[in-house]
Image 1 (spheres, helix red, strand yellow):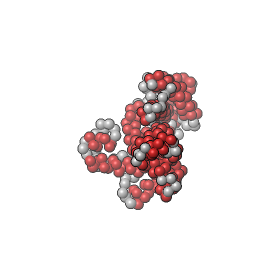
Image 2 (cartoon, rainbow, N blue to C red):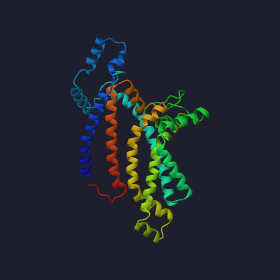
Image 3 (cartoon, helix red, strand yellow):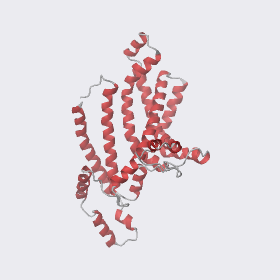
Image 4 (tube, rainbow, N blue to C red):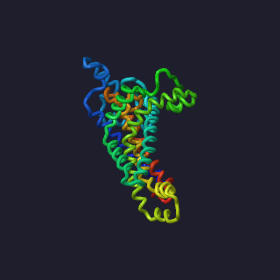
Length: 334
């Protein structure tokens, strides 16, 4: 197991290097000049050239990349061109918001997806199967930003049940102990703030979790149908096990193997996919922050945030592989 972890970590190095090269190249090849963005369209050439030299943008691209990657390895992700604040500090302030939204969305997607997939597999070709799988197909096909706008229109604008944007109402003030408002409000025993946080989370988490829920549901159904044909399931039925024991103990445990892979990949995808959701709901996470950085040509934020998200994605993949041995001891990693 230890050798496998070391091997996966070593393979992660060229992956992250490739991501850093790709992002750095795309950012610097894209049209637009950060110095011109900061000084305005009517700035004179001398001022623009002086600012480019100050920010190191006049140096060769290879030298700029070397400085970026060596600094990143040491934990220095540079300074934002627009705000002048360290990128890692701004990232740390916004990352809990994205993690909280992603985890709530994934929890909803996993519970609803597993339930729909299991019931659809057990009651194959029933009305529930047709409705749930049709809904799952619609969920995969539906753009997140469109769904988010429709949710805002119906539940916030028309009905007024849920807030349009943000993480917490302005009338509440909680201590940022962990950065997760659900946890911080409970630590303060401010249950009104906790409930308000839940209401702010509901629409964006549902919009973000729709596609993962649909994928998990379809994957669970397909995996359960395949497993239910195996000999050990028929043996369990012949031994007198109840239907619930056969489904939950014998079938589901083995059917979860591919589903775990999907859930793990979905978590990494949610961090990236949260960009559209956060922009739609004005959620103060790294997604909305990254969109603003792209519009303002803030190189350090774009490069560093993408590299950090890629690192998180790689780590999640390693953890998912290790979970195989936990769910099914028969699996041996080599």
